[in-house]
Image (cartoon, one colour):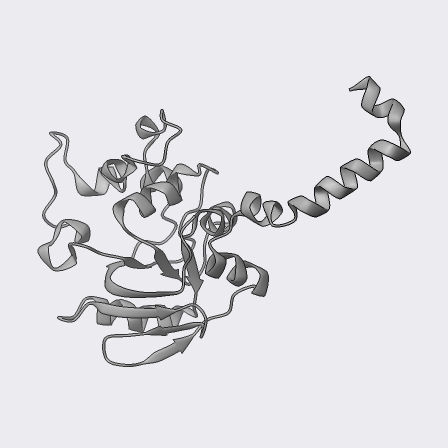
Length: 204
């Protein structure tokens, strides 16, 4: 998993409340267990018409938002099913940060396991950022260490994040990577346990 430290880039406004994971990536794109190639399915029904042609009015299809790295979204973003393909698709598209007043719980947790930063801010602050994202300058900056979002106009907003999750993102660690940091301790425990209960070792 790639570490997350600072991110600078375009932010696209997506003022849709309760946008669920089926809208993030529809079910027909869930046949793969790899993380590559999912960008095509991201927001598919919003981005493309029945003939597979891009819809020009959708924000990510507009020239000003090509290369978007962040989304500024409505409340309860990522609600619905627990599909991990949702953060995978966002990352494959190039998006590494989503800012919203609230998130679906499972999606929120999945983000941290995949190196995607979900930022919760009060609704009025998200609205202000969304208005700036609609303007002529779409360049935002996120500093995870300082826990700040800086808008194109220079406004700085502070966000909260669990210290443990922050450290894992900064270090590029998912749960498996975090566990592997303690592999020597695990080996010592298993060796000691084997001496204490050798009959269990024979049984296995």
